[in-house]
Amino acid sequence: MSAPTARGTTWVTLRQHRTALWAALFLLIAASVVMTGVRWWEAAASDRAFCLDVTQSERCGTGPWGHASAMEMLRLTGMYGSVALLLLPLVAAAFVAGPLIAREFQSGTWRLALTQSVTPVRWFTTKLAVAAVVVLCGTVALVLAYRAAWDPVAGTHDLGWPDRGVFEATGPVLVAYGLLAVAVGGLVGQWIRRTLPAMSAAGLVTGTVMLVLGSLRWQWIPVKTLTGPFPSDPLRLAPEAFLTESGFLTADGGRLPHDACWQRTHDLGDCPADLNITGRFADYHPYAHYWQTQLVETGIVLALAAVAAYAAIRIFRRRHA
Amino acid sequence: MTATAIEATGLGLAYGKRGRRALHDCSFRIPAGRVCALAGPNGAGKSTLLALAAGLLRPTEGALRVLGGTPSDARARSAYVAQDKPLYPQLTVRETLRVGRELNPGRWDATAAERIVEEGGGLDPRARIRSLSGGQRTRVALALALGKRPGLMLLDEPMADLDPLARHRLMAALMTEAADHGTTIVISSHILSELETTCDYVLLVDGGRVRLAGETEDLIAAHTLLTGPVADLPGHTVVESRTTGRQLTALVRGSRAIGGGWRTARPSLEELLMAHLRSPDAPPLLTPGAEVAA
Image (cartoon, rainbow over all chains, first blue to last red; front, side):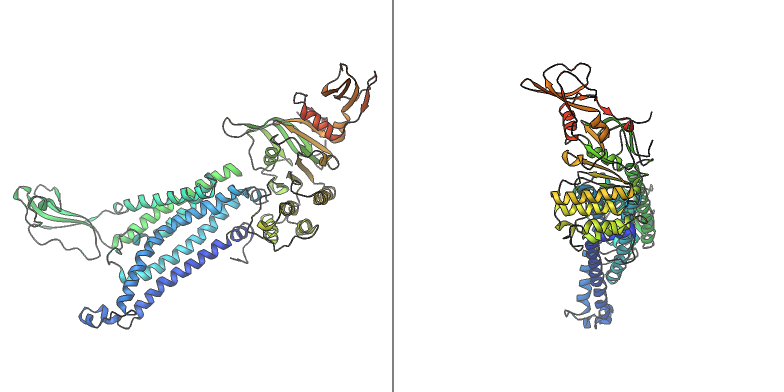
């Protein structure tokens, strides 16, 4: 990137990583074009109205450019796109830790940079700031493009809002994970001063944080519980609700798992009297919890990012200022 | 006393917690405006000393003051060229000089930097650093250092990659810089002969300690090369003595006249340094100007 107006440490950072920036920009544009393009295809398909109307589904074509093909492509885009976006913070962490920082130490160029007039901390924070701006703009654009592609197929198999990958790719948490990745990269890169080990370690740390928070995220907002009498038909939840647990209620207020009767009678609706079952329950997250969980997780990740960035700059200052 | 460029007091650096000591208990002073030869064998601690002065390493014992402040305070006013001449390989020569301009706002002297790059010709400003020879890289690295218009230049084995002609040209450019701007230059080398004509100050380090420090003239004048029959030399501090047959050659401290058939001569700087390197037990000598004021 030529960045004609950039000055000082910013110019140096941009010039050093010009090729990587062009590559990132190309990939960003390509991914956005694919995601919005397939969405445009879906919206423009000539048989769209018939395909969305159950009563006219016989007029919904199966041709290669028809609406059904577009929906299939959207599903594929949504599946692969969510995996790719899930990996994006790992890539960002690896780049910041490796080529951006550790390589300066490995190749010795840090001695050139740190003996100029600008302060070492200025040099280091510029690197992190440039990476943070690039990651911020990139993830915001990708999340918006992903949401555009995901919207028509939202809620289909493996593309529900609580599904791992989809949840991250559709909201501000991805932006927060990207910023965390930059801070983790800054911390790891100056600690492990060799490019490849630093890249692996930073990716591993970021991935671990995403994995751990991802397995905890549905516990932050308390589930809602729906109950109903037994015997009766199974409980009906709103189609977009995210069921976390269901089962039977007993006369003494206890809970039994959903397969408690089946274990005994091999019939889900036939429950032995000694179980004292009086009702059914279902714990679930309504769709409203999507945004609440997004905001809580974004807050947690941004707090972690701030701590990591503060630690990275402080350690760098102590070592080099 | 003249202004001080570098002053070390009990300076030491150990790598790792109980690691090898690269420098130990070094106290010396380099006055401003000198061209100082930092001499010593490989592994003596020359590079460590220069990196400490550049603020890239922190001393583990003692203190180091550069241009009246800490090495960090002096960062804008000192320039450092590391032994391996680190540069960004993907940048062109012109872009590398722009790095100097961008990282030294308000100080950068493009003319001075370009003069070094253009000197002797043949250095295309559009050439990438990775395509340059070792000597060409040295010129770019020195251009970056000189473009900073530093008060102190710390050069770690700067001439190792240069052919004799380029070496001569660059030394001349450095000497002009020193003469025109009063720049202090500390230049490390293990090629002793190349230092004698250009350096008016000497710091000899060996095994992490300072062995000699002071004005070249004063250090030479403080020693005498004796040749004569094999005999004891009472009353003299003998740095080194060698016998060849019945003849003794000795380097002694002091310039007192000696009777008894001794021929005396003024040692060259190289003889002086070599004698000290061959005799690790010779006591260190610092001229009054190189002593740290208590």
